[in-house]
Structure formats: C-alpha cells, structure tokens
Image 1 (cartoon, helix red, strand yellow):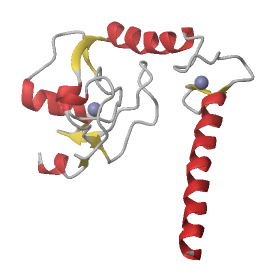
Image 2 (cartoon, rainbow, N blue to C red; image 1 turned 180 degrees about the horizontal axis):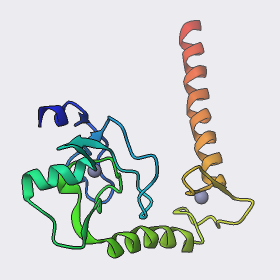
Image 3 (cartoon, rainbow, N blue to C red; image 1 turned 135 degrees about the vertical axis):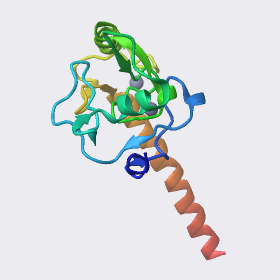
Length: 162
Ligand SMILES: [Zn+2]
Ligand SMILES: [Zn+2]
C-alpha cells in the first residue's frame, strides 16, 4: 500500500462533472502503452506477480471484487489514470464504452459555441484531443486581454509622469 501511495499525486484537478468528490488522485508511474477500448489510458501497477490497473487494484483492496463482467468507469472525471475511488463506479464494459462515445457524440452534435457563434469550418479549430474551439471567442478573449493590459500600461505611464 505504501508502494502504491508514493506513486500517486493527491493534488490533481477537480473533476468537471462532480467537483464535490474532491481532486483527482493521479497515477504518476508507468501507464499502458495503448488506450483502453473506452479511449482512456490506464496506469500500470505491479502487484502479486502481475500488472494491473492501479485504480482496479485499489478498488479491490478497499471495496472487494467487482461484479462479474464489470469494469470501473471514471464517470466523474474521465481520467483513466485517476485512482480516487469516489470518481468511479462499476459498469459493464459496454456501458463504459457507450458512455465515452456518447460524450463525443454530444459534443459533435453541438452546432454553436456557448456564446452562440456557429461552429462553421472557418470559425472552428480542433485541438489534439479532437475538441472543437470557437475562433471568434478566442479572438474576443485576446482582445479583452490586450485592452485591459493596454489600459494598465497607460495608467502606469501617467502615474510615473505625475
Ligand atoms: Zn478523478
Ligand atoms: Zn464563440
């Protein structure tokens, strides 16, 4: 158990879907080289002569075996390397995969950003995770940032002249 704890960062980010559950406990040692069918990458922990996913190992230690045919679903945070047991629940493999697919599908089905700008091809940038971002909003954010910064600079100059 000590060997397990020293590989965990207990100061992870708060889960978006359920911040009340507290921060993610992130596995900092080695991870699987390939993502799980649900798209998440899990950690690797060597125990009892085999390699197991650290979150499954911890669940077994603290809560006992999973019901047959079930896997742990990180429903709160979607971070496969998180070992905070309150961020996961047993689900069938199929439910687990369906849920991650539905998150992608919901995001793909959105036609507008939260500020009601259309996700047109000119207005959309896609990052490495496949998430879409609104270019108009990004431009507005930049403009606001430089506007306040410019004001501060001007104010600073005036103060030094006086
Ligand atoms: Zn988590
Ligand atoms: Zn926008």
